[in-house]
Image 1 (cartoon, rainbow, N blue to C red):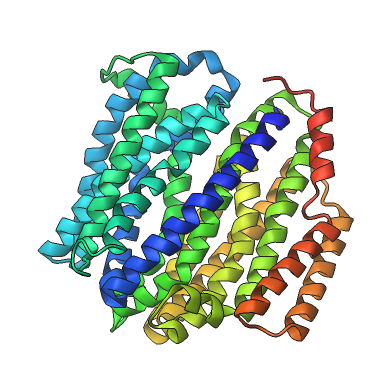
Image 2: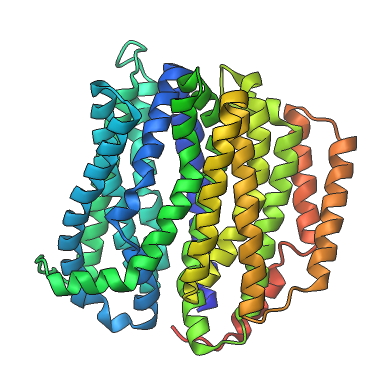
Length: 480
């Protein structure tokens, strides 16, 4: 099992290193450079509004499916046709609630039209995620890896043909970008369903009320958790655009700093999605390898996050200048704060996944509700005064609070040890990074020197420890 996990993780890392950075920084950032901060800021706000309630498209079905198929693979072909029919009802509910919320926020008819397309895109994204949850539960990690990047690859080809050729005489509109995403998502969804049908056979699409209510009863804790987490991670840009006097511009500035964090979070989610079925099966079988895998996963992700935080803070202007043409200085403060957020988000990804696999949804929902209250309250206070920087500060406060709570609870509930050597190695890494940032000047070329030196430190302090991972593979008693 861990051999399959490790090889699949390497494949996913390679594919995502090749595709997603190009999509995010080559395409998405180029779109913002072309259309400007205000136009992109409005799009960014509408995009995050479409995220807020998209759990209603899923109500926790994907996590529930991954966990249960990992434990009971023989059930895969029995229910997914019924679930798809149920999802169409959920889509109508999601679309209605999102559009009503947009009306409450005071968006005009043109903005509502754009939001409508983004709402449809969310349906396509959720359908892709639903198919991928089956691939993850069946441990078809390589198939999942390919589907995870296909939409981005298609967007690169479609949007790149317009951005970097003279086919439109240099003109570009944010509306075009939204429709290009629609095409990329649709083609990916068709491909994913074709692969699943090839594996499980053609389903019968019919709505079964009893089955739908049974799914809701079992999965609503997942749905509530994701809804709460989505609110405290995505509401900042919506509030920023709506309550700040220069909201669209501030949202565009915030988006420039948030883009790299979002890219890093995508990589972390890939890692977490691979861990979820592994953790679920290990917990069921009471595997003695659980704690070792947890420690290796946490060290790898959190160690990398510490390195990223230091380097991005010290080289914020240089990094942003490599990506953007405008508003670089204005984006630096929020960018620096957001990069430190990735440490807390990495902790949440590891321990949140472990607690989800163990069914500890009641605690996760409680701490997420605290996160929502804290995030909205701090944003209401800070955004009118500090704009994008205030939103970033609210994010780091919320993420740190929820991450610490998850870490403490997981170790207490599962009676896990937290090795003292991990604490010592972390303190040593922080000290070395402080010295490196202090004595190695910043600059476009020296940035790469810092990255290489920091990576060496991760190896020296065993945050990246391939021998231990290989040892876990050899000792594993789990069966495919």
